[in-house]
Image 1: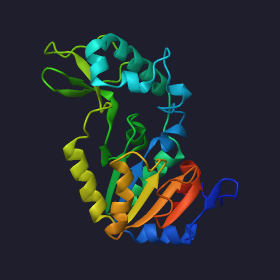
Image 2: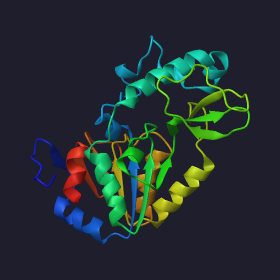
Image 3: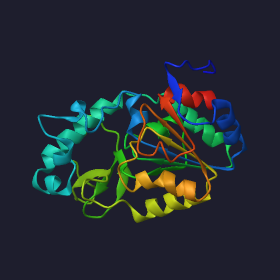
Length: 251
């Protein structure tokens, strides 16, 4: 866990070293973390837009829409059942565990995640804002009730106790993010003095603007990714490598 990283596993493109960032983290009173698909990929979660995201020759953009669900709810649920099966046996990695540990050590902590796989909860993280929902929850189209559901395989089609059809409690293409979640995210960002941006491309809005907003509000912002992103030139430090290799070094 505390062995030094080699130049083959980590590259620091900023002026701040790992030791200085560790010290800044220890002194921080309010920490916010934005986590994207990269952190889940280290646990083996298939990349949503990669070749592993294809299913029966359907692209995710064709399945993850309210229009597709209205037309072919059974087909969409078969796709989500396939995705849930792929996730069911996966475990949190060292980065997930390190984030949960950071939460225990700072006074104020918020984790903002773009992932729907629930791995942060399994790792022990508590204060989580799930921007895109959670694949292990279902929402009734009739009464709007939301419940946890970890059935694998899930019954196709699943129905609520009220008789309404259930859908995955995730944000689909063309749908707006929850105003409540966005408000909570902005409050956390504005109040933080240290922010990590981990495993996210820095392209998809509004999450792509979070790091810049944190910088504008005076936070020290550290990016961790396997490659440079459009955010790299604007943050205080960028570490190129796997989050599971880098984050434990800060504990």
